[in-house]
Image (cartoon, rainbow, N blue to C red):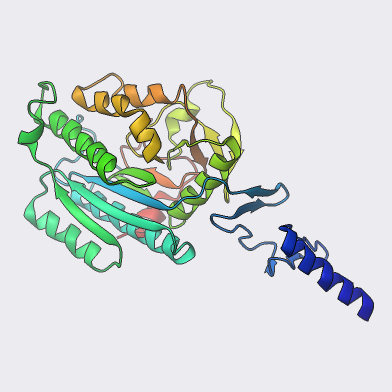
Length: 330
């Protein structure tokens, strides 16, 4: 028995040296990782381990992520008269969206402290009282955050004349987000609109799954955190991938909330820029064109929920306790 224990220790030590992990299915542990098998076995920037599929060596390591949070707390629903779920003033959705995002960032930073996460809020002329509420919310968090105010005059000569001011503002604030990312982003960039509520592990899962999938396909990709209902309203074929802790599916359309790399932002800058010059049909026409060339994936089930009208095909993700998510982020 003593000899067996010594041999086991030597085998575990040798496995660690050569980079292999040992699974003890009898005791439901990994002695090389010193973890139970129901714990998180992956090591960020090193390896992604999913039972029973084994290990993926991380070759595409995430160093930093710039988050662009785009706010307009004055307009209830852009370009339509429908009410959102719970029928509250827009500032209520903005604050809960930001609160859920801040909590998800905090959760991620505890697990991945070496990954740099910066947050920039691009605000489209919020009332002073609303802007003060936003500032008060971010002051309580130890997250590197700054606020940029949209200058409408700057974009008057760039964006084509629109039928209403809301459409112009939407295009201008989106272009400001893309320009800021092009100037400031170092690695990943995450564009987020202010009517999405996020689950706590959203940021962790996005980053860890990005590393895993990107390392497997050996190139960058696009990720959308929301599982939109419109994805189930046609017969479009999809591929299902394994992420960090959930399944992901390939998609060919997103709205304006998605994550990608600075490299792809530069590579497809014309598409990003063209998106903002005029209202297209669909609005994200030039962004969706990129997905004909590059992989874009979304989670099942959803990491973020688009709080629009209950009947919107671009809104509420299926199988979610909306009331619970709403109340948790008050």
